[in-house]
Length: 577
Image (cartoon, rainbow, N blue to C red; front, side, top):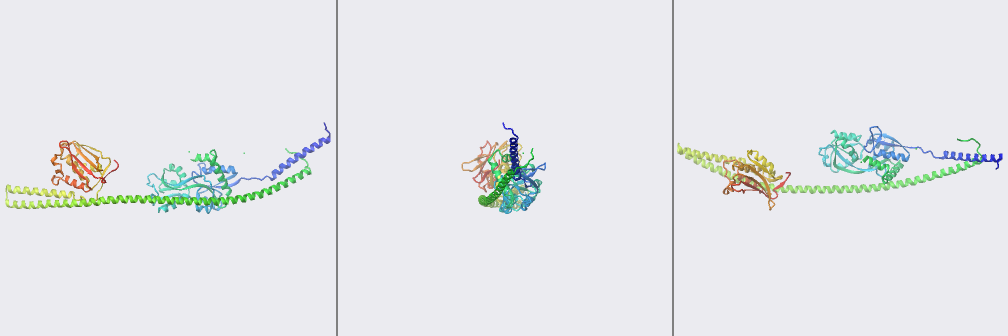
């Protein structure tokens, strides 16, 4: 084995050269490696719960906050939060005081001042919220109302345009935060608030409000940057969102689920090592120059592709907006057509009702004229008889003959008085337009004038309503009085109905009294049958006949009376029982 001093010296010299070469490579790497500093990204922090807000500990929170923080960790950004209202944040973004605004919607007006990413974080729609029992259910109910909204929010902008389409005039109250707008509505300062459905779901229970059926403006929530700047931020967000949506286990997916269910030795460096370092440095410099040139070309091509992509996305967005506008106009036209059809149906119904009323009034006036003629004849006959009796009384002098004539005169005066009372009570028959009557309520009002303490009653009408003269109550009063007063011995009365084969309906009023003799069944409806009473079945029949309703008595003598009121088709209906 060779252990001479020369051999040992050569071996030490080789080790020293290897050591210095390694040190030189490490030094070159340290000198020429790029120093990557974390990028500062100024992000707006308005109060847009649950997208972006400040929690009770004063820290940024919300769906978009967690997403941008995860993007910043991946991209090596340093987030600088800038608090302010939404309106202030838009102004700062336009002037470049901040780099990014989150959780906002894109509009044609905003496109002129800002750039937006293309991959939406999520979608939402605008909705009206109000206090329970406010009566606000449709867009038309907002006429003259006070609407609270967030200053600078797209929901308020879109609602103004939406209201103009329906000629809705409202007062708008702009607030700096959504909490202020919801609180103003809950306190009665505003009648309703317009906001994204995401905010409404979080706030309705907190402020005791309720949602309405007024929904519009489906929107995608995006990221916004100043016009023409920070395109790398938008590209990073689009890349992150696309990857996150494709991966159910991603931070994006979990965030959506949450918010919605890191000894040296001295010596002389040989000359060949210095030459080696120089050559390596030259090669490294050439590599750096080529990298810079290549990076510049890549950036140029990327910018061109980004510009083309932005133009393509803008065209797609424009076509989508045009399609949405056409769809909305089609829906508006359909709604207008349905509204016109409803109005036409209402007009047809009112025309039919008017026709029935006109026919009933004509018939009522005819009957009233006949009644007036008959009443006038009664009074004329009574006056004629009274004059005769008075003349006879004058000739009789005194005694029984005089008393007899005076008694007959008194009876004649009573007949005239009853005729006048009769005419006065029914002087309004047919003078007012017929209307719909709830038979059950009309029956209750009628028997309230009678003593029914000893008679039980059963009523089963299922909400039956009939179209008759306003004096219908007098009809039921007459029928019930004839049962109670004139058919002594009745202990119960039932009021029911039956359907007939000719599509008419019959109201049945029955008692368990002695009934009406067969010979009198039609006489009871004759004029003058009950001369000393204020009510008359004759007039009851006349009142009903105004709207083609008939009344007859069909009971079995000795087994109780039964009045049948037949109502033709179109003159009855069923409401709430």
